[in-house]
Structures are given as structure tokens and as C-alpha cells.
Length: 171
Image 1 (cartoon, rainbow, N blue to C red):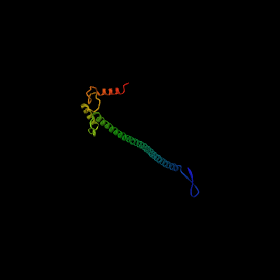
Image 2: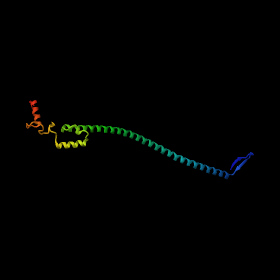
Image 3: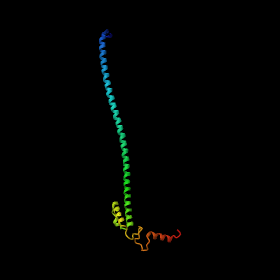
Image 4: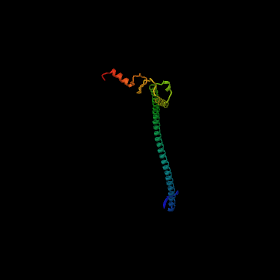
């Protein structure tokens, strides 16, 4: 029992059972508040974990986005290089076509108008046909035959060899 002062100045006695009942009530309140606090902490911890996961996801997305930006920059550079290479390829192709045209004009003695405007396939077909038919007479091409020469029985090669022998007799 606990002694307590009354307003009249005397001591009042409180039974121990009342004190135990108050203690029990306060303990229940404390346990409820502790349980509420633990539940609130658990929810706060869940929210904190969610926040950490979202931050990690955001960082991962930022990292991936930076990688994609670098990839796009690299792709743009490669596209520029590809365009330059395509242009060089077109120039080289045009140069090959022009050389093929010149070759046909010079080798077979045909007019330039015949080969102008033809693509590679057309030039190849024309060249095959001309090889079957052979060069024009008097084209000046040494084919090992006696085309366009005087009738002395010498081939063009033999004539060239004789001319060089006359010019350089010591060799």
C-alpha cells in the first residue's frame, strides 16, 4: 500500500490491488503504443526500402540512358563514316565505268557514243560481243595477226623488234 496525502492533510491509503490494476492498464497502454510504434517502424522501413529500390532503379536507368546516348553518338559517327564510304564507293565505281568505257573505245576502236550511258553490265556485254567479233581493222592493236599491215609477211611484233634492232644495234 502506498500512502497518499488527502486535501485535509491526512494520509490516505490506496489498496495495492488498485495500484496493480493501474499498472496493468498502463502496461497494456505501453504495450499497445510499443506495438503501434513497431508497426509504424516496420511501415517506415518498408517505405525506406521502397525508396532505396526506386533510387537504385533510377540510377540504373540513368546509367543505361547514358550508355544509350553514347551508343547513339557512336552510331551517328558510324553513319557519317558509312555515308563517306558510300560516296567514295560511288566515285570509285564511276571511275571504273569511265576506265572501262575508255578501254573499249581504245581497244576495239568503237566510237565513244556507243559506250556513253552504258552501265557496267552493258559494258561487259558489249565487251564480250566485241571480243567475239574482234577489233576493227586498222585499230593499231597488236593481236599477233597481220591486220592492216603491208603484205611483207611480218607481224606487228616482228616489225617492232626489227625497228628497235635498227635503232639500238648494240643490244
